[in-house]
Image 1: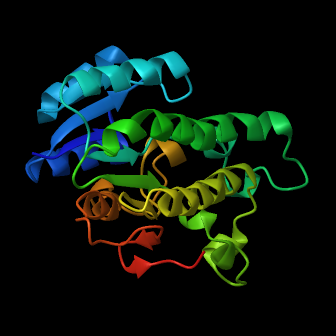
Image 2: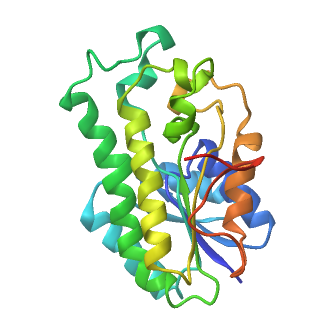
Length: 238
């Protein structure tokens, strides 16, 4: 039996990923900052709730102890993240380079980057005991320097700084961790522009479509790719 932890899984892409992996035979720990919301979501799909706030050392450590006591972990899906102030504005009002400040940047970096490192570090000892360990880091198409610098594309037209920067860092973390831990399949994924709370449900895809690549990469075997960046169609340019 494969045991999987998904952070930020009480709704949206995390919840759909949990539902699909349970259907595929995984035992899923549904991670949520809010205990009651997590409990209700887990009960709905047959997951195991676990409280985990990725910005808090004690919360992450407690979650790791709980999962270790229950038998360990095979798959970690780093799904939890925020878009910050950029998610609360129209596309034309996204905070661009001329207006972005450290106060705007800091929460995204603390959550999307440091939170991911905090969780991965805490669960590495458990993953290293697995016979088929996998880490899936939920990134974004806006993390691709190639796409963002290619004229006449949607990514090029996006003026925001904070969110793309945080996800570009996720991609670098993915590459470096994959090199450091070659026995673990560690990849970054781009779900696509999916309608979730992150973008005020403005996305053009359903959560079912967006979760496809996350679910696929969470089920890699030890011979699968590592250190890559993928969407549902295949590898993406960095």
